[in-house]
Length: 221
Image (cartoon, rainbow, N blue to C red; front, top):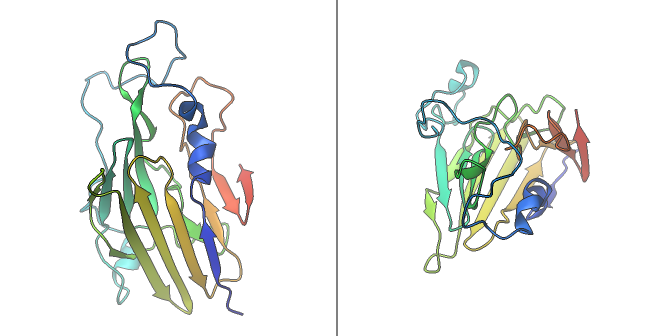
C-alpha cells in the first residue's frame, strides 16, 4: 500500500545540534578558559571538503537513469557553509561562521559524514536509500540580501518507490527547511548521522554514535 509522507524538519534538526550557540553572542576575541575541542591537524592545513568527482559504489553505477557520479552542492550564507550531496540526498559538511573554537577557527559541526551521513533515509533500519545516487535540480548557492533564498531538489524513483527531497536555504537564518515527499514505502526512517553536531569531544553531555529519526521519535544507539 502506497504511503505519502510530507515532512518539514525546518529548524528542528539544527536546534537539536546547535542550540548552545544560538543563545550566546559571537565572541570578538579568544577567552582564556573554554572547553577543549578536538585538536587541530598539526600541519595547519585547511579543512578538505568532499571531492565532487568521487565515484559512487559500483553496484549502483549501472542502473539506468541513476547518475554515475556523485555531485556536491555548496551553500554559502552569512551564518554558515553547508554542502549537500546527490548520494542519498544527504548533508556532508556544516560550518558556523559566527562562532569560533578555542583556537579561533570556525566551529565545524560536520567535517566528514562518517559511516552514516546526516539525513540519510530508507524504509528500514539499513537506510537503503542513503547510498543511492539521486537526480539533482539546482546548483551552488550564495545567499545574501540580494538573493535571500534558494532551493535544491533531489529525486529518485525505482522499483515502485519514489522520493523527492527539497532543501530550502535562507540568508540570515540557521534553519534549513526540508520537505520529503515519499511514495511506495510502508515505513520511513531518517538518520541524523554519526558525530553531527560534535565539535567538542571532551563534552560528555553529547551523544556519540548513530541517531535515527523515526516519525517524530529520536533514537540514539
